[in-house]
Every structure is written in structure tokens, then in C-alpha cells.
Image (cartoon, rainbow, N blue to C red; front, top):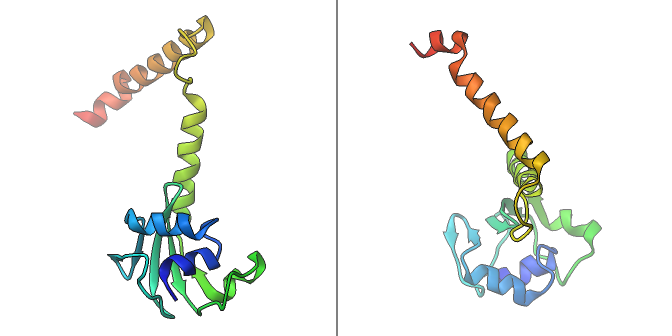
Amino acid sequence: MRIDKYLWCIRYFKTRNIASTAVKKGQVKVNGQAVKPSREVYPMDKLIVRKNQIDYQLTVLDIPPNRVGAKLVDIYRKDTTPQEAFAHSELLQQSKDYYRKKGTGRPTKKDRRDIDEYLDDSDDFFTDSNNDEAFN
């Protein structure tokens, strides 16, 4: 089965066209090599799929006959993605929530106080007498 069709069948991409585009962009690797959408997939192939800034690591267990339901996906692939990848994406999401959107204007008085407090705390860490001994 083609790699783009396989990724669509196991529900990593909503449409086959999106899966094909992702493979063309190099976001999918089979056994460590970037491939074309027409590359055949076989059982025990190792896939790395980059989606939403997470590198999913998959092992092909079997080839599905056609698109399968969400509950049956685990029959055809084994997900070996490390938990650190999800933790990293969670940190990225929290950092995006913190920053102000472009065009929202100048920081408010409260925002300025929060920024000043943060900067003062980081300066205290580097100028603390206990830390001076560690750096000498």
C-alpha cells in the first residue's frame, strides 16, 4: 500500500491529499529516509510522521484493506512516540497562550508590572551571594 494511502487509512490525516502533501514536504520518513507519496509500505517499517510540531514514531504492524475506524487503528500500527514529545508540545502551547497577540496595542500597567517583576526575579538569581560562590 502507498504511504499516503496508509497514513490516511490509519487516520493520521483527514484526507489523502493532505497526507500526500505532507509526504512531498518531507514530513514523513520511512526507515529514516524521506520518501515520495508512491512509496510502498510493508509490515515492520518504521515511520516518523511530523504533525503539529510532534514527531510521531510508528511501526507498521499490518496493512489495512481500507480506511479503518478509530478503535481499530491500533491493529495496524504501533505508536512508539516518546512522552517528551508531547510534553514539549504542551510547553509550546502554554508559551503561545502567554504572549500577547500582535496588534493588541501597548502593554497595560498590569502587564508592565508583571514583566518588571519577572525581570527582577531573574536578576536576583544571578546576583545572589550564594550563586556567586557557585560561579567562582
